[in-house]
Length: 226
Image (cartoon, rainbow, N blue to C red; front, side, top):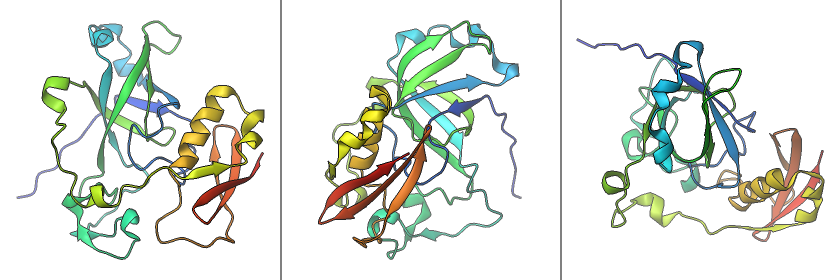
C-alpha cells in the first residue's frame, strides 16, 4: 500500500533567478551570488536558529515546484550528456523524479535574527529559483558530509572547465556583486549540451537585468545587457 506524506513549507528562497534558464546546474558553482532564506510566518522564531551561527555551510531541502508531475519515468536524459543518452532517474539529479525533492549545499554568509519579517539566513552558492519552497534546512557537518575520495560516476566524465567570457566590460553597468555573479554564471555555459549553434542568441533574466549572449568557438560573447 502506497503511503503519502505531507510536508510543511518552512521558508522560501529570495534569489536573483526569476526563470529556470541560467540557474547553475548544481549548488556551489556560483559563489558570488547571494540569496536569502526567508521563513514562513509559522516558523519565524529566532530560537529555531539558535546555534546555527557556529556553522559555515547549510543543507537546503527544497521542492522542484516548477517540475511537479502526476507520473514519473524510470529513466531521464541528463542535459550534460547532450540530452540523448538515458540513465536511471536515481543515478541522476534530474528534477523529474517520483518526488520532486532537491538538496543543495550552500555557504552561510550571515544570519539576521531580527528583521521585520523575522529571522533570515543570507547564503551564497544557491541554485534555486526565486520563491522556491523550502521544507527543511540542516547544518553541514564536515566530519560526516565530506568525502574527498568519493567517485562521481558519469558526472565526473562530463565536468566542463569554465568557458571564457568575452565583452565582460558590458556588465560594468551592473553592481560589482551582481557583475561577479553574472560572470560566474556565464562561465558555467548555461546552454544545454545539445545546443551548439554559433548563430543563436541566448538570453535570461538575472536580478533586474536581461542578459543576451552567444557561444562561438568555445568562447561565450556577451551581446547585450539591459
